[in-house]
Image (cartoon, rainbow, N blue to C red):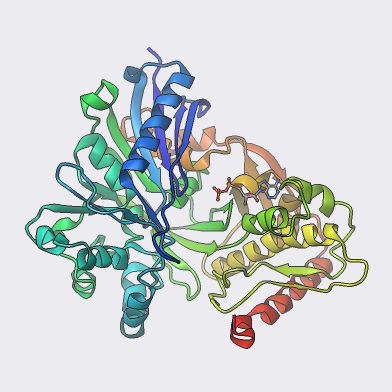
Length: 493
Ligand code: ADP
């Protein structure tokens, strides 16, 4: 009987499920959206029951689509939106809505902690203190949900990110993996344990925390009532780390960039914990007794700027049209767009930066704006990669995500980086990474060499720009960024 691996890819707006075969072909696919809840401005919640239902719906659709039986599933891997905090009781019942990574309700709490403990937190967790990570969200739940702290102290409350919640529901085991733990801001990434000092700082009773396991090992088996079979759940990683794994970026210096709403760039730094002032240090995965680290740069607005051209100022009908427009020009003609809609993330970290379009003349048209938007995505990516390069040698960039369909963008990225940009055949790298982790644990795949052999490029973009042009364009970009920074302070918005 032929066997397959089921990957659960639980994202911020939808849950997906994908069935892969041994050659990493996609056989079945299911995707269900779930509602976003905004109880107050800046607050974002998900209902864990709605996540669970969407995930189960996606699993059923994927299995039906693949025309297989549950007993043909060799293993299940999980990957998820990271940092989102959930609390539930031992029966699996959520005790509050999930507080989503985007939620800003604890920004003030973190600002205060950051003043005194910023460098300690960076040293222990690799993270720059921010409301983005789980620690302050869990503290908020314990402080604000009536009776929760008392129940937690009696051992009746379990905490976890979405991977942990799903795995608990599937198997009854309360676990997470190193990559997800490293995003809580409570986990010591060098000692590989929950950090007592940080637990104290955030007033977290340690009984609520999951056990931290490797990213590829059998955590438990699905309860019979779920799929009618006891299937090993044996892979787990946060979405960005899973994508790095799915790109077979197993060696130090291998980098992947995901081009979605924002861009997420991760560089494998091997067994070395490397710190950079403007990037996050994180755990990529734990595998066969070894932990691999990564540097991460997050850019908030990239594909979202393309959406703004379409839905905001309505100068394009769809995202692919940007390519056609950009190709109408031989150069940017001096027009730059810094899409700092919500400030700038890595490596600038300026929450007061605002968007800027400059170099406009009477002949500027929508093709200039389209081109400037695509170029901006590539410049922002170079900004992060330059920062990484100071710490680790980088040869090429492996890419995934919706905007990588844009060949103009990919070629410009190669040109502006002066490095090869490689687009893989299988685009579902996040789900694939979780599938690989799960499959490796049950010997569905033999090892990393076999997986390396499965990774195939669909297209390689070779750099073709002369150095003078490249550096002139990039200097223009840096100057445009400089002028966009701090603008909200000047304009008071
Ligand atoms: P996410 O997972 O963040 O929702 P996706 O990986 O689905 O993102 O990518 C969607 C994003 O990519 C959108 O912001 C969209 O504007 C952008 N995008 C999609 N296709 C193209 C294209 N051909 N050219 C430029 N941008 C694109």
